Each structure stands twice: as structure tokens, then as C-alpha cells.
Image (cartoon, rainbow, N blue to C red; front, top):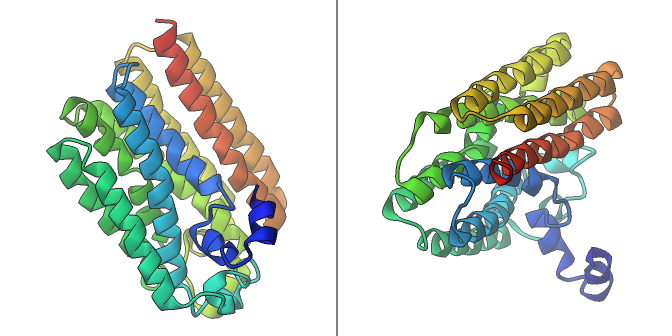
Length: 292
């Protein structure tokens, strides 16, 4: 499908690249924890409206986040091997066009949250603020991954607000787990660009952690599993949840092995592997409610 668009409608291709619709990994990494929250908030039977709004919202907001990220990096992406072909770096699109697209995507997202209750609606502005702030944090802190984790986790309290109009303790267990997990996998992602980032002065946790990167990633992953363990106990989940947790832990161990040489290709494979972590945990949540 994407090859058809690229060949038949080449003028649309830079716009697809700008929104990363040609690279769905980011959408999946945002979608899985959102669905964990939607199902738990709905006690296994969330409303169809909530499912649709949050699924579409993930797609739209991930695209908007990519657009504003490329706008922020438009003068540095051309100096990084992995990003030198992005449309703003090559001049295929302009900064003004990117901002117009960003505004359009945010307008769509605003229409979507109008279908939710007032609590969830007002919470959405926090997510918007984090999405706009994140791309610029790499200019002044070595912890941009922490801001990304906060942004990628914002749909969790929103899902509970939409379904039950409250933020119970389960929200913060999920939020903490997802934030820690996001910092871990985005550090793997940053390891791919570490050498280029050092040359151009872009900051990241991969640079901050240095030679301790793999050990700290493993620590963050273990810390992410702990609140999920507490969540399982709180919700009286059974063996299916623990099997899902074991699967996630095994995938983390595989990622640790993948990054043993710290080469860019293997670090990127480890990053991509996280989509299966999110999927395994969602299947665990889903089956716990289906089979209860």
C-alpha cells in the first residue's frame, strides 16, 4: 500500500514521511499502554466510543508529535545519518508546511476529545503540552526520554477519566510502569544516534548513561515490571497476567543480549522488539477479563 502511494502519488510521500505513517512502530508503542488503560478502566468492557476515540487519538497524536519533532530538529536532522532523508531536512517540505499540518492534526485531535467527558477533555491539554515540549527538551537536558515517557503515558489517566471519571491508584501504577519502560526503549533508540548526537550537541539518556547504558536500561525495565506486578495483585489477576509478565521479562532479556555490542542495527532491533512487550501485556489484560 505504501509503495503504491509512493509510486502513484509521489507528492504525498513527504507528508506521509513527516507523520511517520510509513513507520508504525511509534504508533504501536503508544497504542498498547493506552489499550491496557482503556480495558482496565472499563473493567474488561470499555465502551466502543472510548476504544475508537483513543485508538484514533493515538494515531493522530503520534503523527502530530512526529511533525513537531521534525520541525524542532529541522536544522540538525541533516547531520544525522538515520534522519538525513527526512522531508524537512531535504527541503521536500518547509517548516511552514509542517506547522500547518501540525495545527490540522491537533484540530482533529480536539474534535476527538469532544466526544469524551469534561474531565478527559481538560486532561488532554496536558498531553498536548508535553507533546509540544518534548522535541525541544534535547536542547537543554540529557533527559528528553523522561519527557517522552510522560507524554506517551498521558493517555492512561485520560482513559480512566473517560471511562470512570476518576483517577484511582491503578492509574499511577500504569503511568509509572509505562514511563519507565518508555525511557528504557527510547534510550535504546538514542543509542543508534549517539555518535552523531555527540558531534552536533544533541542530548539524550544514551549519552548521559555512557558505558552504563545497558545496565541502566535493564534496571529501568525491571523497575517498570514492579508496578505492573503490584497492579496485578491489586486487580486480583491470575496466572495469565503472570505469564504475560514473564513474557515481557524474557523479551527484555533478549533485548539486553541484542545490544551486547552496542552497534546501531542491533540497538534498533532491540527498540523495535518492544512492540511485542506491549502486545504481550495487552493480551494478558484482555484474557484476564475474558476468562474471569
